[in-house]
Image (cartoon, rainbow, N blue to C red; front, side):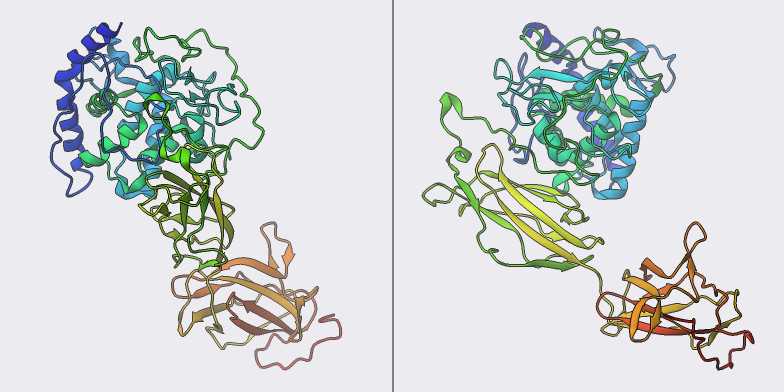
Length: 578
């Protein structure tokens, strides 16, 4: 089988360089200044050679096996009637991508175009990886929401012909509490999914066996580190970080080129599954099922001991660190010598930033042995968790950094989002269960220290009538304060700021009276216009107070009079406030 695989790779070698050239050329149209055509990558017959210059921040699949069938030599046409074929193709089916799977790739591309426009991720790259990893979710055997009919689970990574990756998820995803197995249509290992997982179909959970979730996670994974996939160097690095093999890289590039030349959607479940795999001839405990053999109902994964699905755009800290192999002969890796992480300079320091700003202080962690010696060149993973939208520079909530000569890993700069609150940043040694170190940070609301009404027109109406809308302007240190949250309350009196129970009111979404409004936000000019105010049947003079974080406050007088005259001077009735 090894010789057969070698023949397939040699047969595709002629297309490999062309594929790489085409990818760079086609990507150049998406991003000005893209590099020229890449040099062809060399492969060896019958085995894969690891390539240097691969990022040290993870491996999506744990170098799990993959499908090795090459695309047909002839370019596909956008119509299913095209005639194509090679000894390893399935004719027109090779150009067709199951409809739901294709939709997941294209939606992931669109989301990444908005979230990380500098990445220039083409959906064809996701399709190429999906083809190689799972045969497009086993030919599109997915439900309407994109969940695979049954879980896609790769062989257990027990070191017998595969990488050795001991269990990191307590069997929650793969049902194996001894060793990890790659999971889902994009074949993430559990420890990577724990921080890279995304909710792509908006159901509130990140499921590796859902093609929308998996495609979006793969897109974010490929777009990390500030990579621009329209350049040869970053494209190659991204693919190699998925599976560190030149054979894998060339195979994926070939499929990218093939899909770029024309594809079409086919009904879910009608796609073909490739015939050859990189682990042909090796024993395996589990592999992607063949269409027609899986259960007609989705299987339920083992219930995790902790929530397996992190919140949207908020990957959680892995249950245990990703594995790092030992060197040949069992020699401990540098991470094996690490006893714990310490904070070099932030002990007792409060990390605070205003919404929308960057944190001035940088988070770091130093790796040390039991006797306090620094350990260089080991990977430390920083993970943001908590109910805010804070991120590292680049928009990610996870960053993996190698320690320097002093054993220090310096995390990227923290950026406060628009949501105020407290969050934590944890750090762990990748590949070793050393004690980590954590930090707490706070995002404070945008402030305004002054509020004024934009009009001096008196606000008066008859009982049961309507007032004109109130508009106020917020400033901070004399400048317009944009994106500042404001609260408006119909108060009992100047000395009693609690909400009144009678008098003017706003209406909620159901048309019911409310006398306190939250969630108001100033615009780019510091202005906020309040919803329409209504008067009840009680005459009198009432007060509306608007406040902002930072001390801004303005009190507006409202008069309800039978005369409905702006010049009327009506004393409050005994029932106006209580």
